[in-house]
Amino acid sequence: MRLDLFEGYDAVINESITPPPQRTGLDSDAQLVSQSNRLLQQVTLLSTQSQVPVELYDAEGQFLARYRPDLDGFVRQLSVNIRTLYPGTTSCIAGVKNCRAMP
Image 1 (tube, rainbow, N blue to C red):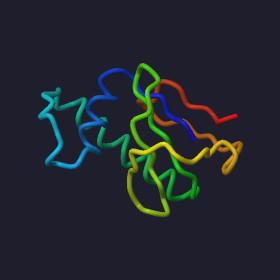
Image 2: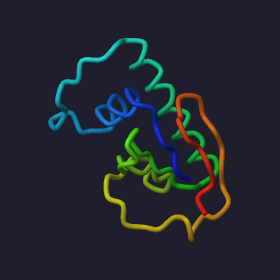
Image 3: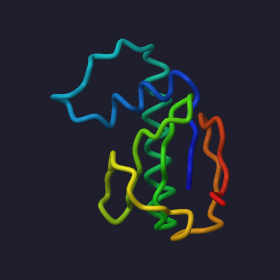
């Protein structure tokens, strides 16, 4: 499943899933951080319940990371074509710009 994030959410989520030693120290609004954290919780829950990886993309369409339920975490490398592995799965979550099943 692919989720395209709104600008602002993408930067905060990217920072959140970056290992602490590699973070840039992004200064963000507390409400945006709270909403982004809730969105990440919903993404992980959706992916875990459906056992389908969820790919996150920034506001410009660039790949950020994939949540892998089998690893219980985010992976930065885009190496598996989940369009063929998990066709037809979709669900929309608040804070997501574009949510659709991958063709």
